[in-house]
Image (tube, rainbow, N blue to C red):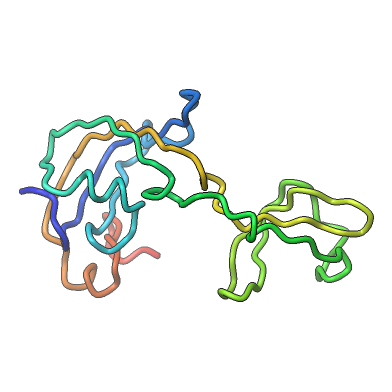
Length: 160
């Protein structure tokens, strides 16, 4: 069965950056399960997997526009440390959730100077070309429940 919209797909993968460093991998874990066509994975990878069948292997490079987007300096902002509910717990490099114009967004603390905190709301992989080695492990029809929920459920049923 080939990969198309509405299929439950399982892939093994390794993700590397331009320098060849492994950023993520399914090695030693269960394959990644996703619902094809539901936007569960980055657009460039999903497009490359369309039409593939179990056993297919591919190596591909995904440009930022088809991955996590280009870096946007407008998503970097500085706020007063005292605005945080527990300012004493804020640390450089920590991930937090912030209320932004677009709703709640993840952010990373990238600087702390003089009672002010600089937050970066870009995805950590924004602006990077992503290099994937992928093997299609399984493709099957997604259940009605999986399609209604927009994602593949775990081996033991519904697991969010």
